[in-house]
Amino acid sequence: MFDLIRPLIFKFSPEVAHSLAIKSLKLNKISLKIPDEIEKLEINLFGKKILNPIGVAAGFDKNAEVYNPLFNLGFGFVEVGTITPKPQYGNPKPRVFRLEEDEALINRLGFNNDGAEKISLRIKNNNPKKFLGVNIGPNKDTNNRIDDYINCFKNFYNLADYITINISSPNTENLRNFHNQDELEQLLKSIQKEKKELNTKVPLAVKISPDITENQIEIISEKLLNNNIEIAIISNTSDQNRGELKNINKLEKGGLSGKPIEIRSNELIKKFYKLIGKKIKIFGVGGASTAEGVFEKIISGATLVQLYTGMVYQGPKIALKISNDLIDIVKRKGFKNISEAIGTKN
Image 1: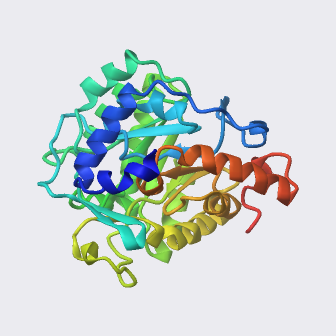
Image 2: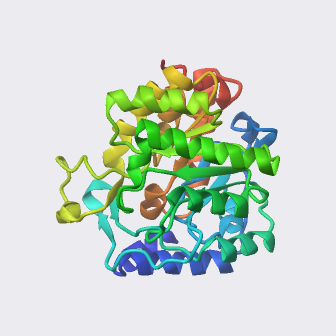
């Protein structure tokens, strides 16, 4: 059905199409058939069993409205957000652009969301069926960004299977300063202090920019290890990597996602895996839209893989298709379970 109506959907602006997708998912009660031999894709992580390593990246279900319908479509996990303490509109429209020839998107949304209080209540009233991550960030007009992260953490620590500290969106001014040594140290220590005071063991993730330097890779790895971070999400959208793009929308300001950042994402996963892979789990994101692409991220060092742009172009059955194809790859490569493949390319 998606293949038939995609030309119609793509006549709408990306934000209108996204809004229609959210409304459709709210109404959709269909659960797709779980593939045979799905146990080959099951991942045990932080005491939870995850159906498969394919998840929805933050940015799709910003307001935590459709995570359970997404689980019904065959995704093993979903990350909602980015969520800020106070509701905010984000940047002026238009702020999302398709680059169809490049299988890419550029967005400059700016953390548009309903705010922590409303969204936390929504999750309380709609118990997640499977593994749920919550992505948090600061308000644009805040006087203290660390306080904003802590505010959000306190709202969601007992509702999520992991909390992601988003320091890597290119659409909030100077947010990426948290990649710097001193700023990152202060942020992580503050959140770990709050975590200790709340007596919670919820795993913490840090979402990292694809535009960091070689020197920053080592510094960030050291800070993640020293501050007992459990997950590194690699990577976010890029405000670089425009050189080879074909679509005229490449001139738009914002974060680039999709196929053009796949190679950079995989390179970073490999580099971080060599430095932190024995102690910190890596979630790979950036450009994967096929089983082969997901498998490449896994052998590079990712335990789980997130999608967003691929779903925009391929539709809601993408997780089911990738799961079936991924099972075939696992069998062909001689693995009993996908977890045996993690980091084997290094």
